[in-house]
Image (cartoon, rainbow, N blue to C red; front, side):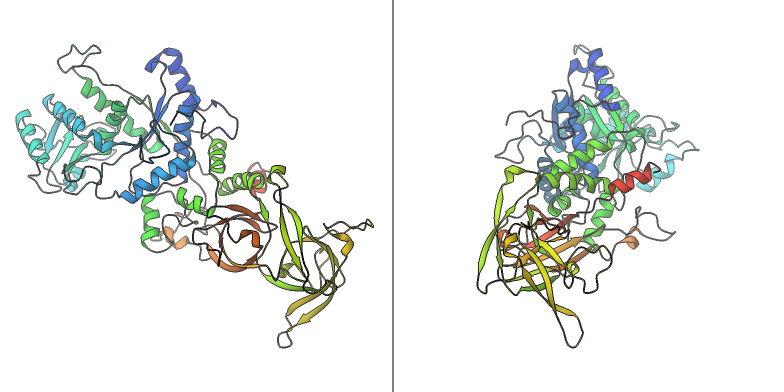
Length: 595
C-alpha cells in the first residue's frame, strides 16, 4: 500500500502542520539538521487491553505529525508482558488504529497485520545489549525480592541503599544472567538491574530492574524466553532499533526520560560514530517528548479499571457502547472523523487538564449532521386514524435523505390511513406555545400532509389516550398549504401497516459524576456507575431500515443519531443511540467563558 500522508489529526480541521509545542520542537530539529531532517514517529501500545479515547489522541498526534512532515509512522506492539497480553487485544488494536485512519509503514489492505512491528522481535538484541552492560560493569544480577527492592529504594526524601549483590563480579553476573535466560531459576527469584545511583533524587535512576523472570508462554515467541525486559529498558531500545526520531509519550513518562537517555548512553559508551570504538558503532538516540494525556469527564481512562468493568459484568464487554474504548465508540456509531476533529480541537499541551465530554459529543453531532441520512422512527407510538383518507390506499411520499447534502438524494416513504406518531406529540390540554397536535389543532406530517385532530379515543378503565382521529387536507401533499395558511408544528410518523418493530438501545454516560474517582475514603469508582446508562426501548421504524447494514449511521428525525448494531436482523433491527440531537456544548462553552 502506498504511503498516505493524509493527517489523521488535522485533515478535517484544515490545520496543516499546526503550531503545538511538539511540532515547534520538530521544526527546530529540522532547521538544525538533527536526525538529518527525518521525522519518524510510532504508536507503541501494550496488548493488555483495548484502546480507548485517550489512545486515540496519541494515535492522531503521532500519525498526524508523521503525515504533516512527510515522515514515517510505525505501529508497534510493546509485547513484553506475556502474563497480561492476549491475541484478542492485538487484533483489536490493529483494527482500531486502521479504523481511526492512521496508516503505518508497510500497511496493506489484504493483510491486517502487514507492517505491524513487535517488540518481541527485538528480544535477542535487547538481551545482547544487556550482556554488554554487564561487561561494562553497568548492570548486575540481584537476588532481592520485589519487596526488598522497594525497601532498599528509599523515598523522595531518603536515599536508597545499595543491594548487597551490587558488587558481584562481571563473571558471576554473566553466569547468573545466562542461567536466568536458560530457565534455571523460579519466577521472582532474581532480576537484572542497572547500576546507576541509589542516591539519585529521581527514583527511576535508583538501580532500576531491567529483566525479570517469568515462565509464561508468549503469544508471539512461545516458550523461547523466560526472562522479559521491563518497559523502561525496552522502550528506548525499540525506538532506537526502528530509527524513531521523536518518541512522543504522555506526561507520566517525563521522570522516566533520564532513564531512557541513560540506557542508550550506556550502550553507546565505548562506541563511535564510525564504528571504530571497542564496542562498535553508536546506536541511534531518539528524542523523547512528553505531552498531557486526555482526561474526559464522566469517564475513566485506566485500562485496569476498564478491565475491572468488563470482568465484573458492569458492561457487556470491551466494545460496549458505553465504554470509552475505540471499539465501544465505534459500535455506538461515533465516526472516526469526529474523533479526529475532537483530538485536533483539544490540541497538545504540557499541563494536565480535563476535557468536557460535551465537546466530544459536539464533534459527533457536527459530523453526523452533515453525513447521516434522515429517517423516521417513533419511540413511543400513539396510533392516529385519518378518518377521511381512503381505506386500503397506500401512497409513497418523497422524503429528502439529508437536507445538508443534496447529493444524498431522496427516498419513498409509504403513507396510509393509519399511522403512528410520538405520544409526546399530542396533548389533550396543551400548554401555551405548544405547536404540536391537540384537539382541533393542525400540524404538518413530515414529508406528508397537514392533519387536524378531530377526536380522541381513551381506555375506559384508565382514561389514557389510546387513539387519535384526524382528518387530512389532500391539497397539502408535501406539507404545504396552497391557501398560504401557516402551520407551525411539524411532527414525524410511520405508517402503521409498514412500520418495522425495532429495538433502540438508549445510551447515557457510564458514570453519574464528572470525576468517577472523586469518592469518599474507602469508596470505589464503581460506586458512581450510572444505573440508567443503558435503557432498552421498543420502537417502530420506517421500512427503509429493514436491511440496513451493521454500522450504518442515521438520524432518527427529532430524536437523535443512531447506529445499526451488529445484533440487528431484518426481523428485529437493533439501533444504538450515538448521541441525542440536543447540543449542550454551546451552553458549556459559554459557562466556561464566564458568560
